[in-house]
Amino acid sequence: MVELGIQIPTTFDPFAEAEEFGRTGTKDYVHFRIQQRNGRKSLTTVEGLKQELSSDKILKSLKKEFCCNGNVVHDKELGKIIQLQGDQRKKVAHFLVNAGIVKKEQIKIHGF
Image 1 (tube, rainbow, N blue to C red):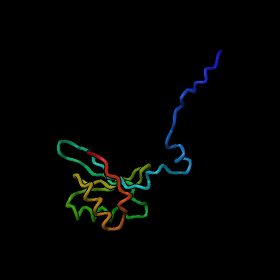
Image 2: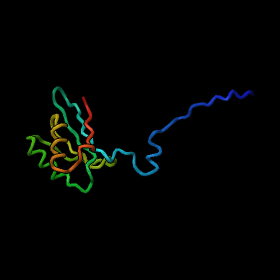
Image 3: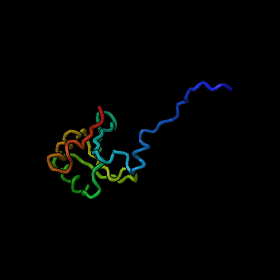
Image 4: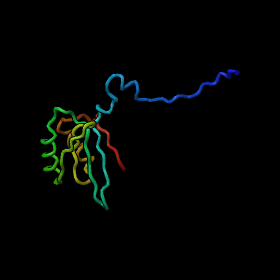
């Protein structure tokens, strides 16, 4: 056969190099997401907080500040996730920055 000198593209994993070092980069950020429940009801999730922080104390102060209900969900891959009723993404981000828990550069707000 005649070689044409054409390279066949292979699959490329952009996170392969990061996984070699033990982390994919998402642990550096605190993610604020919104999940639509039914109708106008929604759920705000906060993930990526440091493990040494007390999620229960943070949740208690967030519930008291924003007059909403919430809970802490334990996930095997993501760790502790704080869930709050309603769209509280910007309020929670502002609260955590003012409390000195996270820096403004570490915040990623997702959703519409």
